[in-house]
Image 1 (tube, rainbow, N blue to C red):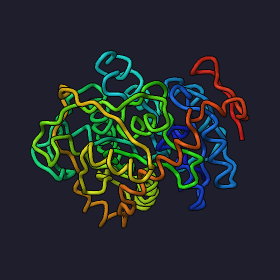
Image 2 (cartoon, one colour):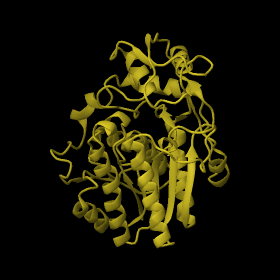
Image 3 (spheres, one colour):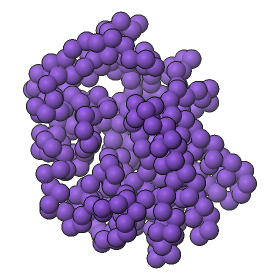
Length: 357
């Protein structure tokens, strides 16, 4: 039996593939490569010494997805696939609702048809919106502020309703905060297309010379240095959290919701200082006005995951920054320079179908 990883070629997906393979799981990856490269999966195989099937399909293509389930014995699904840029979701909400929500509905319909009822869902702390208090607990009021966050909230509710309709389903909803860092080897990491949306990839691209300077939005918040405070979690800790969540749903039914974070908050300028110290690079930055919708402080209460999953984030911000810089310095253009070496090629259309081992 294998675990199906949707969006497995992405940043968090690849790191989770490594942890699952190293734990002895068999995996199958489905990805449309709209925001990722096949090269990332080639490197996963190289890192782990393990082979696995990859299907280049879109979750909106139900027929091809059914073929994956027909050709393989699948026990559980870890569902990463989805669009994830807040600003883009505001500009084109229908695209986000169609891709994220309808894609998940099709996935669940196919799972139901093949009697696969275990799913770990990649949710987000964005479902909390502007929290009333921090640290944020799992039972906090959900009040999303953008279409991306609303797609995550909607999918959570769909999965809850699915369990209500059939109590043999087992669901883990993982709300994670700000993933950063990279694999210690420097072989896999975050490789955004275009200008990064997140802080650490932006900083590292300034450090490597791809961008001129960092733009810091707001220095007048009620925080220690006036810049926004967030909970940053190492992507490897996050990946291990998915393995622990998978173990949970494979041994019990129900809907289980967990925050995955460190339970600590760091400001933008603290992250800049730490990155400069660990990389030896200077990061020029410009202070701009606040962005609409940004909040001053956001970090997680993680006790529930600590107790129920036996999971805790182990890596601090020094290691997060060190690993980010190792990845970026070894791969200044991300996976782009290695595309010609890949054993596969990106399909001409997202729905084109191929499978590699």
